[in-house]
Length: 529
Image 1: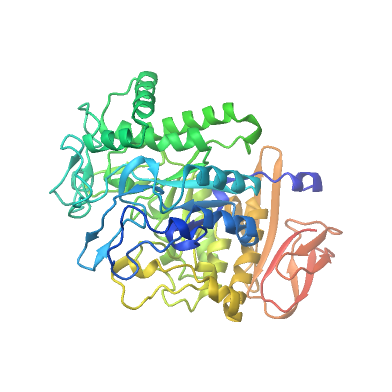
Image 2 (image 1 turned 90 degrees about the vertical axis):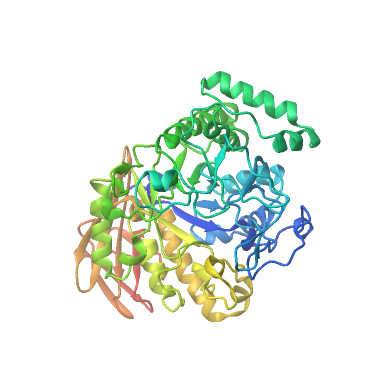
C-alpha cells in the first residue's frame, strides 16, 4: 500500500465504527430546552427527560470526543416530536425521552432541539468525516394519553397484542398494550388525523405540509396509505439535512415490502440532496440502512425465521442487520469469533454487513452487565469483522445496573462524564477503546477485511481488504505478554518495510519476515509507518 493511497482511505460502511447514544442521555448542551409541553409530572427513575440534546452531541463533536474514539458514524435515537404527556407503565410515569413514541413525525421534539440544531449536527459531523444515522419508526405511534389523542382507526389498530407465534402474530398486532400499531399492511387511503392538521395550522405550516405531501404522492404515485405518509415524513430528513443512514426500528413487526419502498425513497432523497448540495457530498457511498430485527443472529445467514415463514431482510431494503448473537459469541476465544464472522461475511453475507454490540438500550441481558470485563469487551468488539456499535458508556464503564429502576431504564443512565474527568481507571478503559477505535477507523481491513490466523500461540492474525484500486492490510497480535515480542509478518509485509504499532506508538523495520516490538502492552496493532 503506497502512502498516497493511505491518505485517501475510503469510508467503508461494512467496517464502520458506530457510536449509538440516547439523545436525551448523552450531554446537555442547552439547559434552556429541558422543559417543554408542560412535562412537569414526576416520572419513575430514569423514565423522564434528563436534558441531553442535539447541541450536546455537537459540543462533543467539536471537542474531538468522537475523533479520539475512532468513531466514523453516530446513530442517535429518534428526535421527532414525542407524545406530550407520559404513561404509567406500572413502573411510575414514563415520558417519551427515548424518542420511540412519535406524535408528529414532521417536527423535532423541543427537548432534543431544533431543525437548525440538526442541520448544524450533520454539517459538523461531516466536516470530521463522521456520518449521521437517524432512527426511524414506521411500526407504531406513541401511546394514547389525556393530552395525546389516538390516531384514527383507519391508521392504527389496538387491542391485539403480539404473541410472536407466527408471522401474522408478529406483524399485525401491538407490541404492548397502548402502543397503537400502524396499519402498514393497509391499502386503504386515509385522511390526515384532525389533531395533526389542527396542530400544523396553529404552527402556521399547514399549507406547506399539505403541498409537500401532494407533491410526494404525485411524484411517486403511491396511494395515501399510512405507511407512505410516514415513509415520506422520515425521508424528508434526508432531503433536507443530508443524513447518511437510517436505523429502522421494530422491522419484523411490519410486512417486509414496507422496507423496499422505504429504501427506494431513501435512495431518491439522498441522490436529490446530493444533486442540490454538490460541495457537501462526502463520497459516492449510497444511503445506508440498518435493520433492528429483534433476535436476528449472524448464524441465520440472510434469513430471519418467524416459525411459519422465513424472511430475508437484506433483500428487502437493508444493507445491514443488528446482530443479536454477538453478545453470546463474545464469550468465546478470539479466533473462534473472528474466523466465524469473517467466514460468514465473506461468503453468504457478502455485500452486506451486520452490526455487533455488547450492550444496548433495550437488551436486558448484555455481555458484561457488571462492567468488569471492559477491556476484553473493547478488544473483541472493535477487532471483530462486521460493523461495531459502541453504546454510549461502553468506553467509560458506565454502570448498567442502576438501583431503583425498572426494566430497560437501568441501561439508560446519563453518560458518566464525571468519571472520565476524575477516575483514573475509567480513563484507562477509555484509552484502550480510543486506541482500538482509531485503528479500526483508520483501517477498513479490520471490520470489512478478510481474517487470516498466522499463529495460534502467540495469537497473531492479519486482515486484508481490497476494493477497486484501494488496498489495506494490517497484522494484529493479542495476549502477547509484556516486553519484547516477535511477530511473523511475511504474509503481509516485506523485509525493509517500516511498521508502526498503533497501540504503543513504537516503530520497527521488518527483518527476516519478522517485526519486533518492545512494549508494555500485550496487544500489537501493526500498520505501515
